[in-house]
Length: 330
Image 1 (cartoon, rainbow, N blue to C red):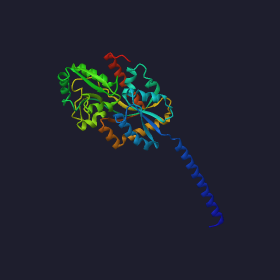
Image 2: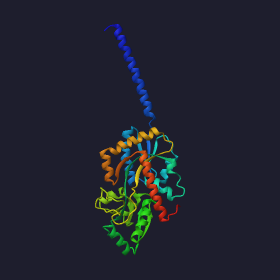
Image 3: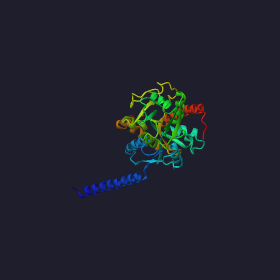
């Protein structure tokens, strides 16, 4: 090899080394700007929303290349978590995973919830719909909803207490409407989330509860509680033997509640798009779909626009139901 050739080769190696060093420096700088993402949950650990958030966060971190940390902010039916989202810096590091209650119901039943979901939040993407269910504890003799009604009329002299995960929630209105339909005096007993309600049901401290299917399904399968009715027009794949209230004559609940992820207003569109695309990929994973379906969800990705449309339709439907019930915001 000539001296000139050696010099040329050395020059190319030095240039390649400099380029690689610069690329590594840029890569490290970019990695350092990727802060962990907080995924706020408005209910305690152990409930359905918490389990769903943890299932998604594990896969989202792989898709996004940054940690996605579930942060529980329980209380007031998700109101505390929603307020925390509003107060967060809109830099793409704080998101809120929630179902319909905090977005569509709470702002109608609480005079000053501390946030306006339309003004203060932007939809990032949806991933499922679900139905609410009526379940009885193992301490009751009821094997069906009809059995439960008869048990309340006889053992309870027409009165019964039904647990709900939060006050002024969809389950509370359902308890009232079910009581009116079957002419029994059902009183809602509000809890701070589904986990403490379930603990009382398992301990036979309360005879029945209304919550989402995913809150009941594991204990239903284990025979510790019995789901005796689900809302909606179709039986659930995870519990096909359980009849719908539509079958039993309780109409008007065809618009299904939903799960979605929200960011504070002002979050860069680039981040919202990237996260939503990552969510679509995670929701399409067979293991994720199977797991969420087994929890009682009907899984299906919704774009930010589709989530916004569902949110509006569901809010309008429940505006009519709440107004008809005579409920006054408190």
